Image 1 (tube, rainbow, N blue to C red):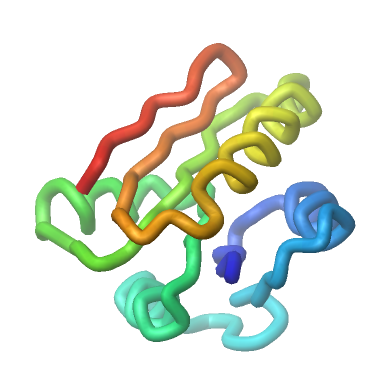
Image 2: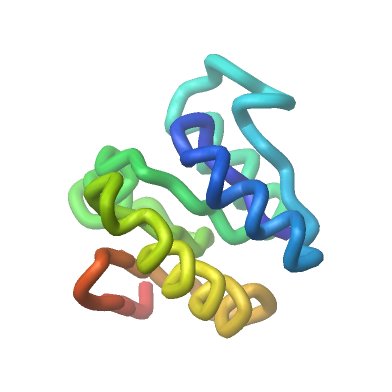
Amino acid sequence: MIIADENLHQHFIDQLVAAGFELVSIRDELGGISDHEVAAFAKYKQGLLITEDKDFGELVYAHNLRGISIIFVRYDKSDLYEVTERLMRVATDYYEKTENYFITITANKIRINLL
């Protein structure tokens, strides 16, 4: 399952749903919950969290958040479609992995860190 964080651009959500991914949108289902609650929900659902919120990097690296895989997307609006292609490829490759990762996607690269 994919957990789309509240701040994730609707374009990404639409593309993931169209590709057949099971997806829960925090914005639609649990709007206004804290980052810690989002992380707990993603852990409970064993979901792949996709976010544009850099605070999740801090939770993982400074506060040792574990037991969750996160895809962090960073882009300029002009790079939206290029980043979408990368996101779709990464989501497909990591959707069912049992290990946990922190993956950063930009217009220029994909960085994958095993947690």
